[in-house]
View 1 (tube, one colour):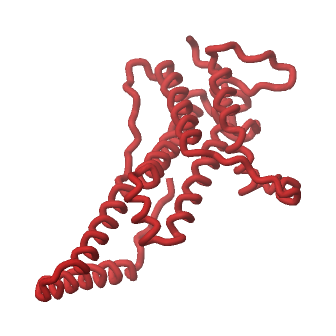
View 2 (view 1 turned 120 degrees about the horizontal axis):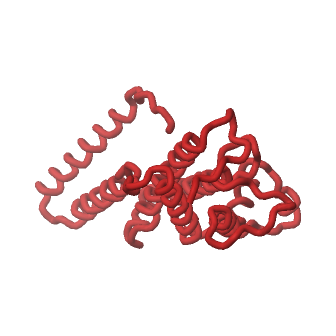
Amino acid sequence: MSMPSTSNPPAALTPVEVFQILEGQYFRLETRWRLYRQIFGARKWDITLLRDYLGAFAQILKETQEENLALRIYALLDRRNDVISLWDLCGRPNKSSSPPKKGSLQFAVAKIESLARNVILHRHKLHAHLDSQRLALGVPLPAVSAKELGEMVRRIGKLIDRVRKVQQPGVATHEPNLLGDGKLLLLQLRRLDAMIRLIKTTKDVAVKRELKAIFESHRATKTKGSRQAPSPVHAP
């Protein structure tokens, strides 16, 4: 199997350079998907803690992560000739193109695009504002479930692995560096909840006083740290 040439690659990039860019985009997508799953795919008790202690912000955080995943998936499926997307791995189809052969790279990308049709609608709502008529008619956008998002991420990863085997034979599948912030957030909420429950239930006045002191000290430390100037963050 030979590496297919790219279709109108921006700035005359080589197929290897195009693949490296797409691989990096996939790794960032995969990392965000796992972080989302860590937080919102957790136990019901953890979801309850999120709602109890974060309030409306928990729902805003969930929706923001879902929107970010949708935009990243759409970017990887963009058919425009002046951007790099998965279509550059197999050639963009046009009106006169014959249906892709089953098992081909183009067939795999087309299948992902078909699964992402609702994601594309949400992208239009967020950035292209092409759903004004839909909103005016009171027609809601179709929901995109976490299961659907996960399936698209899985298929994109499978496609990236397939092309990597051609470009870099013998190189093992690369696992993206995964930040543990999702699990850490839930762990801190569990600790907070356990301490508050203990303070409320203990009958020993001395123990209650000591627990309150620890709790207030910990909260003061966190507040002080949050007021410090943040270090520069370089977006990937």
